[in-house]
Image (cartoon, rainbow over the protein chains, first blue to last red):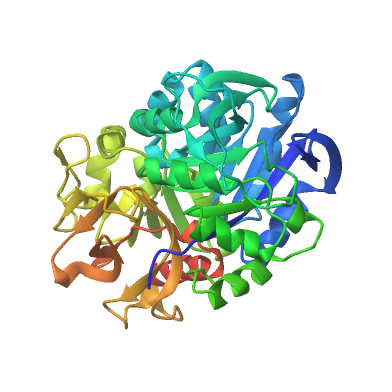
Length: 268
Length: 201
């Protein structure tokens, strides 16, 4: 027997509701977070991720109360991201019942938060959330990655919900985060997010090969085959999906049964 | 109703352990008060984080723990299990509680085998008749998150898991138990293990 590949439903939260968008925009309501989390618990999800995309800081406090309510129903690992900037934020989120916190913008602006968080809470608690986009304009010191159509690009880290390019090379950033003590990388490609055309395999494979911590592929899953590609071609340790689960197109069990028939180790 | 003391030493996610114990049918109390710990029917030593910091924070109640352990059933979870051992090599060598003989070692990463060992893996029952494992099928899946593992003599090995190396994923010495995985995060089978622990108390 072996460590299984993980299937993780992701709940994007805005003002206390689950929402889902395309290319980080055009949000649709997808239900109550506590109800959805409980449903995924029953369906055999391996973990659950909550990403708080609430725009205003005042409303962000509701996330702690929400995590508490969800954690009470959920005997599964829970990762929470969004708006976490300080070790005090991390403490509050973990106290509410989360097991891991993911950080994106905060980690780029202040990479020390990764080291400090890892020192205080353990590396297993600290997830680097990395949002990336393809950049076709060559730049010194970046990692060129070949694309399936024969062209190539480098992947640039973006922050603030995808709105701000940083000029940072995704591969170098992933390695730095690992050195600083991140225990996992949650990788979302803006190229594929919400498209249902499949994960961005080239960057997933590149990050998984460049680091020695688990990589969670995110953004773009639409079919059973996409999960298989994420694990086998993309070498992801976990695949994250939102809309295919929220809108009932696939259940977690459908995905796991399919993967098991194709020889991917999953927990059924 | 059984009173289970969940030791609060300022680290880790106590809420899910609390809810797990409640769901398993006992009365959990989160505490670092020696009197409350001594009067409990069972003790859970949870833990997430680094070994030396955990031991440091545990020092005010170290004596209390050492005196009740073995008389009152104790269950260490994750770092809580590791702290039961003699010594850990996490960030230098650090002394543990020495309640169970053994050491805590770092996983050496291998290709395709990432560290932390994070996710669902199976446990093989090395002591199949132990009451902590009642009703839990051999090779059941539990949730693991750790970068260090316990190496101990076979006499104390309750369960084994293979990841990079075969190691002790659960240990037992008398009424002192430790599990490397997180029963409070392992769905129904995890809740059953907590229920079994309450049954031992």
